Image (cartoon, rainbow, N blue to C red; front, side, top):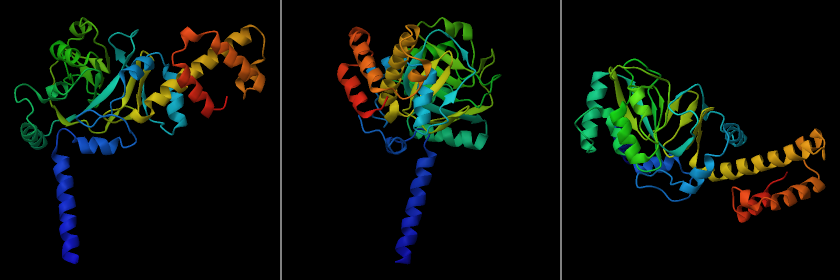
Amino acid sequence: MNRRIILLAVFVIASLLTYAQNVGSSPEYIKALTADWKGERFADGRPKVSDAILARLKNISIEEAWGVLRNKGYMNQFEGEWTIIHPEEAMTGRVVTAQYMPLRPDLEKQVKEQGKAEKRAQQGGTNSWPINSLITGDVYVADGYGKIAEGTLIGDNLGNSIYTKSERGVIFYGSVRDQEGITEIKGFNGWIKGSDPSFIAQMMLTSINAPIRVGRATVLPGDVVLAKKYGVIFIPAYLAEDLVITSEVTALRDAFGHQRLQEKKYLAGQIDSEWTEDIKKDFLNWLKSYPDKLPMTKEELDNYLKERNY
C-alpha cells in the first residue's frame, strides 16, 4: 500500500513539473482556471464570450463595471494611469496573457527549448510567440514588470501583426517602441506604461496564457477586458454577461432618476433609496417609452428585473 502511495505521489509531482515546463498553458489548465465558465470554449481552452457581449461592453462605464465586480467579491481587477494610443476609443476583447521577467540565462535556455518542443517560431525573439497565437477578438495583455527602457515588447511591425490577427490591440504593463508608427496602424489601440526608442533587452518571456499581474489587477487567460481612457477592468468570463446587463440597467435607472429629479417629480432621497411601488411602476412605464433605445432585448430586461430588487 505504501509503495502504491509513493508511486502515486511521484506521478503527481512529475505531472506538475511537466505542466510547469510549458511555455503555453494547456487547454486543461486553462479550463481549470476558468471552471466557473459553462459556455463554449476555444481550442486553447479559453472561454468564448460572445461578440455581442463584447460590443455591448464598450458602452459600460469603468465605474459601473467596477461596482458590479466589487459586489461579486472581485476587488483587484482595475488598473489605471496608462499612456493610451487613442484615448477616445474604447477597446474590449478576450484576453491572451504573457509574462515577462528580467533575463536569467539558464531559465531563458529552458524556455527556448520548450518553445521548440511546442513548435513555436525559432526565428526572431520570443516576444513574437504570444502574437502568433492571437485570433480575432483577442487582446494581448502582458506583464512587462513596468520596464520602459529596453522593455519595449513591440514596435510597429509587431503592432501590425497583432492587429492583423486580432483586430484589437494591446495592454502592456511595460513599454513599446516606435509609438509614432504604432499610432498610424488603423484600428489598433494600446494601453501602455510608456515608450522608448530602445530595443527589447535583458528580459525574457516565461509563460503564455497563465495568470499574470497587471499593476493592481490579477488577470487570467480568457478574461474579458474593458479598456477606456479612465482605466482598464479585467472581468472573469463567467461574469461578463451579467455584468453587462446589470450595468445597462443601472444606466437606465440613473437616466430615469436624473430625468425625474429635473422634473421635480421626486426628491433625491426617494431616488437614492429603495424605490416605492409607485416609483417602480413609473420606471417600467418610462422604459416602454424608449423601446428602440434599450441596449438589451425586452426578454433580457424582463428576466433581469424578475430576479432583482430596485
